[in-house]
Amino acid sequence: MPISTLLVANRGEIAVRILRSAQQMGLRTVLAVSEVDQDSMAAELADAVAVVGPAPAQKSYLNAEALVAAALEHGCDAVHPGYGFLSENAAFARRVQEAGLTWVGPAPDVIDLMGHKTRALEAAIAAGVPVLAGSNGPLEGDDDAVLALAREVGYPLVIKASAGGGGRGIRLVRAEEDLLRTVDTARSEAGASFGDPTVYLERFVERARHVEVQVLGDGQTFLHLGDRDCSLQRRSQKIVEEAPAPDLPDEVRERIRDSAVNLARLCSYTGVGTVEYLYDPVRHEAAFIEMNTRLQVEHPVTEFVTGVDLVAEQLTIASAGRTELRQEDISFAGHSVECRINAEDPEKGFMPSPGTISRLDWPEGSEYRVDSGVRSGDTVAPYYDSLLAKLIVHAEDRETAVQRMGAALAATHVEGIRTTVPLLRRLVLDPEFAAVAHHTTWIETELLTGRAGGTPSDEPGDIPSEGSAP
Image (cartoon, rainbow, N blue to C red):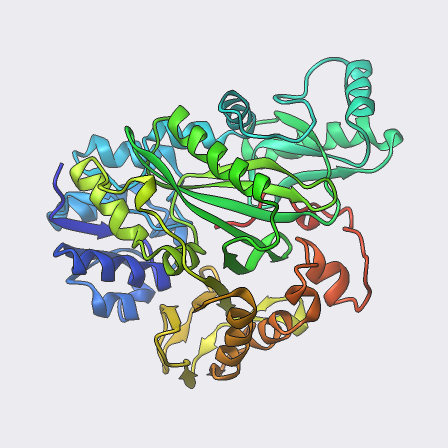
């Protein structure tokens, strides 16, 4: 169904990003806001604003009925959820469609499928996507069967909640005597946290890298837009991303790209999505983590190297039912790096740092891109995710891109609140990052502890598995 008026059901930098692409396509835009966001940068940009509730997200950005009502009241014919909040909520997608509105994203059944880790794993296996040795589905059987499987897979291994995500619902097991107790604990936690006690078992990859493939489909045509590396994380939350993924063997790169497209084809995917993998640099193997059925925070690095506006593609597919892109149309130029700038204090355990921004300076130039949701004088509220902006650079090669990012961060000044800018400067200038020697727990186990060759702790948030949320 053709789209003329779009409700953007999100806030901050991603709302600004979607609004700009939609307006460039000639769409009228309506922004759903909480009471505290009525004067935000995104609200100023939108053609109309719909207040959907008070500041707490549960009463505004997570209030499905209020969002649908706002879309109908303002004459919208489509809803773009951005990322986070309700972007991967199949029930919300169905409610949008039941109201006669177009959902900008994959079908609710696909969201359901990929949101359930064991069902998604089974689909990945059916599509020929490489997976880690493990239960390849729900962990079932008596204690002897579980112990036998674990011996076959080998230690260390991880127990994961089928309904988990964002680094949550994961338990590391390094010795057999801890296995059965950990399985029982994981099942109890999964039931309490996610309403589903199902768990599964996989081999654990030490010092893993996190790589992913951007896919796009319209239900008939399926293609990829290359790969990314998102290995610089703190407590499973990505903070630096780059495209293409550096230092991948050609056969691994080809396999993850092809298998990601196969998975999109298997589930008749519509819109943009991301298939995520763990890469083992010792075995030179990549294995499936999950598929994210939404736009990713790190999508700008893919846009920089391909020249494709992914938000515009989402809207085109939702409106026209097809994409004009074909795999042979996609080419890759240079290297791009993105840093997420958060209102957090790294020196105090990444404690959120709300407050008023008294000064805000960004680098200028065509080689830089800033996706921001804040301006100087804005107040950062304590109610939402701490992401303020994303700083993205592009260059002809990785070495130049990394150097350019260092210069960009040096030219970035945020005053009035604490941010992650100083840590990001340290990260991108570190020789381990330059040498692609980092991994998903490198920040906690090596950089911030001052020791090399560290291994992850047994805390669930430190396990390099589910990537980040969003």
